[in-house]
Image 1 (cartoon, rainbow over the protein chains, first blue to last red):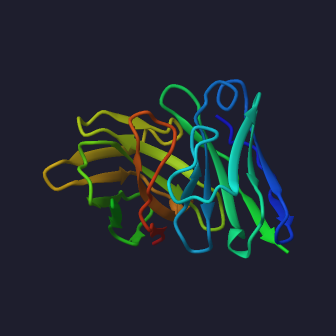
Image 2 (cartoon, each protein chain N blue to C red; image 1 turned 90 degrees about the vertical axis):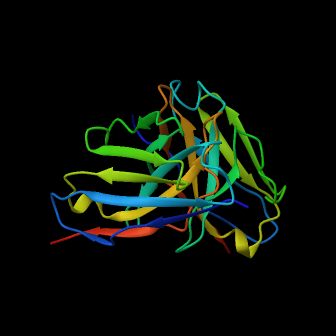
Length: 110
Length: 118
């Protein structure tokens, strides 16, 4: 299984909207609605931001949203805030009880 | 509120076995699956394995030959053993809760750095 493909970096100014992509295959992202997104600040554990493609856990701001089209999932952060600056990782169920992650995207708030 | 805490040696010699334990508080370990993930310094996340309270396990195929997970419901903790470690196994190891429906990990422990070095 290959890792999901994410852009290494993304950026935006406060208040703007940024979208991070996560590209897999028809065997993982395209096959299952089990794409999740994690936010990780430096030195901290990852935090679940989106699960099952579009669902937000309790406490996650509605500025964060997820979507999927074909083999590519996306995380959109609207109304960017300084505290959104972090690394973001996508993950997908890949069948046979397996999971794969993307390489991560560093989001910079300019 | 469920909390997870990893514990174990921070330094393991090459070719030896890495052993970690994750203690769960605030939730019964018999309700969910529980997993291990890792993150080499400066790199991305990798799923290692997850286990159900029945002892049923699922391992990352790339690590399957070296990984063993176990669970102790009486102590509300679960464990990871990774054998024949090399420098490539140096990473922050996280434990996390995995829902029965599958697909994501939440919440995560704070993580523990394990360095493989002689």
